[in-house]
Image 1: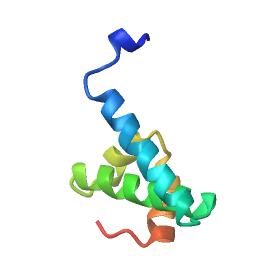
Image 2: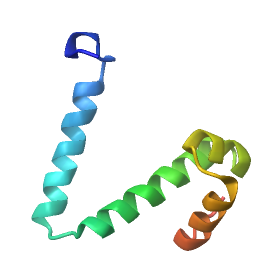
Image 3: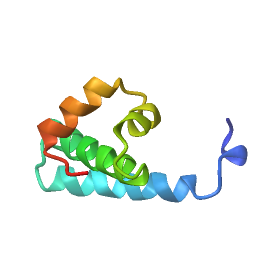
Image 4: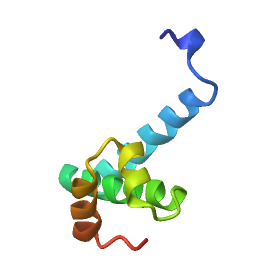
Length: 79
């Protein structure tokens, strides 16, 4: 996909993500912490959008339902 055919808003999202990454590096946040926080937030959002339904959320995330259940428990995500 060329930049001309990229979905509208994608460059803005990329810029926002780059700014967040720069801020995290500036603050000394470790890579593993950043990945964990992103994963927790992402899972919580998809779970919320699916009304707490873990089976639908696991399908949207591309995870096996057991893997999702383990990550929900690990991150102590409510939903």
